[in-house]
Image 1 (cartoon, rainbow, N blue to C red):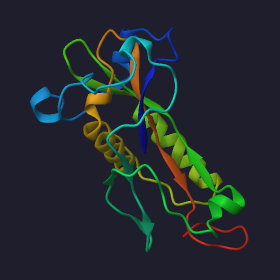
Image 2: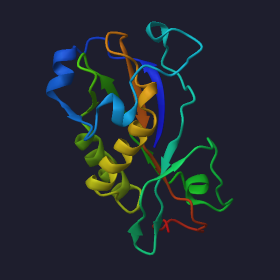
Image 3: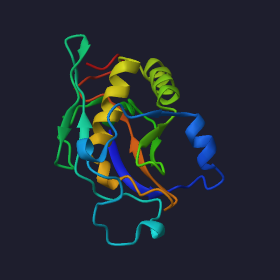
Length: 180
């Protein structure tokens, strides 16, 4: 699950509609998590484009021995993958994209993460990968946002923290079959 502060590419979305369709982080106080919009960027928050920008970390979950592990924060922006990985040879991968917004009261809300979890589960079924349960998906998203809270653009900037859940088959396989 990667993150990047970006300009809200759906400018037609009003703050009101975002409030009606979001899930609030369980802990949102500035003293608990830090304050949205306090990261130092090379451009003003209002001038963000829709592009990758480095943040503190990404979240990694591994499927092994029939179950998903706990979300782990990873500071390094690179991954190590086996040359025989099914993602490389057969395109066994799927992704989603969702946004976290700061609100006027300082809280941070994530836009419809339950719907993203459902779509990712559907993609996993089609690509023969183990589905990530909704609870694990939500835990990973919340973990990523919490660790990168200062990269959530401040209220009124027109920006959002873009969250990109990405699942891929990393085990070495020959032939089409479920990933390890």
